[in-house]
Length: 241
Image (cartoon, rainbow, N blue to C red; front, top):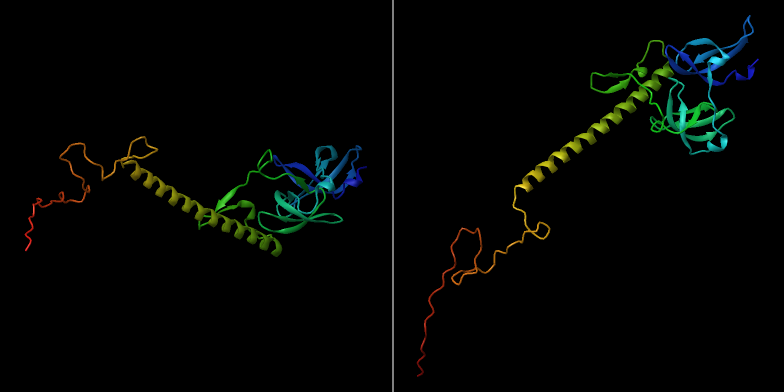
């Protein structure tokens, strides 16, 4: 009988989805079929399955799980995978720090996997609720009456971290919109001006350019004043005493 599977982490199909769970016990029924009882991680529910109907999680080799390695770990409060960093190897598994919320925890050796959520093939679908202040919070973080004080405190910390991140994103988004509107205004005003210069292909004329006609004079354009008038030259004769 597969008694060595007791305490191992697996995936079991429950209500049209696969959930992470831990095998609590193994038995053989009256027909000789081996069955196991699975405790689902994150909520107080257990079910009995055939050994062949559960998927055992394959742990990575310890050589791949040195301190400082980026991976994913199962969070005990909801049983989902989250990005984390391994900080220490223990007898039963690893001590990790979840990068999304900064929570530290110890997970079993078969409750981590290599890779991150960005490279995963399927992203988990999370139902969200909108708070009166306009924040979007996962439905799984809703505080229930059956939650213990530790679970409630963990949920509050995660909600605060989510709200802080959303406030930061909102400030950055507003700053980008303001910058984009100013750039659009500047470009629209600049496009109405006559472009000239080296890159435009149109020569830039100097205000001191000498007119081509003989009667033309040099002056300042746009000053609103006429050309400078000069007195007629006179011929002076000097008388010596």
